[in-house]
Image (cartoon, rainbow, N blue to C red; front, side, top):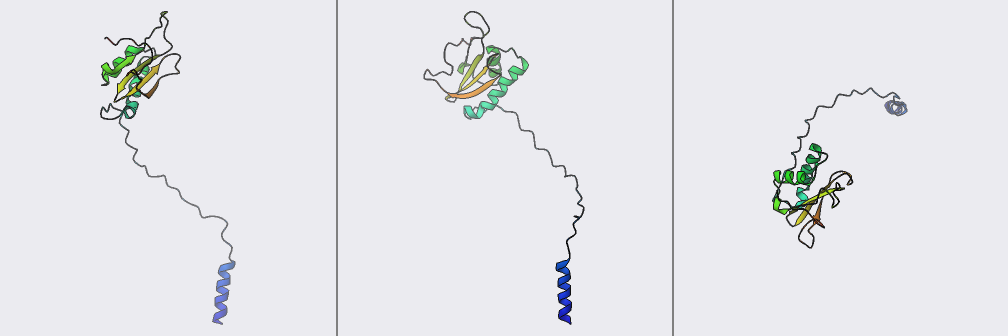
Length: 151
């Protein structure tokens, strides 16, 4: 008889249907994890490459635009100098055309560690843009005539 009892016990376990209603789950609010530390703003790192300093170059250019949507070349050059870039390594295009109209955009650059940090801003340029480009065969960064940075 002991064998029968085991079979019935096993049969009872295997024929029992699972409960179709899942047990209610309790959710707890996730524990507040510490928020990540805010990243430090970009800074000029003279020991690094132009590419590694592009974020800082762009932050300077974007700050100029935010402060003065009508900014011209001198505004960008002055801000870059104040940020620590070498003025003697800079170039800037004219704010006005040869027929005294506002230029569609102004370009400015810094020759930095054998590469060029180049910025562009103006009504026809679609906002501010910054890139790293190779130095031209002339040893400069901008094509065409640039204005003297004599201030």
